[in-house]
Length: 188
Image 1 (cartoon, one colour):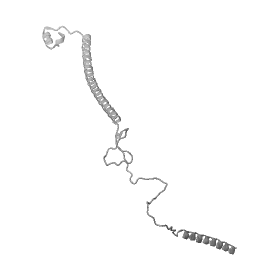
Image 2 (tube, helix red, strand yellow):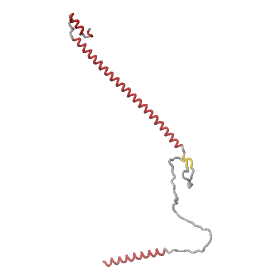
Image 3 (cartoon, rainbow, N blue to C red):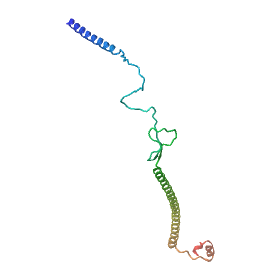
Image 4 (spheres, helix red, strand yellow):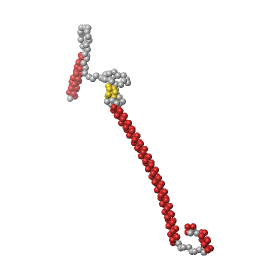
């Protein structure tokens, strides 16, 4: 069985070797240059090139602008030579003017809003001042009412005391002088 495998391996190796030798022989024959001879003539030289593919520019320059819009005037076309800084197109200014007008209107609206807010702030400050004045007035009225209540209480107490007390004895002559000197002025 071992001999049989060795025969097959030898046969496969021989076939592969013949295939490789044939490949190199075919390559060697195709590399021999072929020349064509002709008689020399004078005349125009005509060369025709035919090819397929994509044509690419040698130098590609990206052209752009800082703004976009509709072109009003085009000053350069395809394959036109241009210099650095040269104007190649003019944009329609109507769109830009509309944006400027809108921005101006927004600015005026914002200024009006600021004026309204300042007026509201002043009105709020006035309301605070009025409230503080009303608070002070309320405190003064409360204090006045307390004082009036205290006076009324004292008056009530005095009158209640006078109503419940016994009338004083008629003074004698000697005592009358003394009594009038020490008597309260309101009781006369």
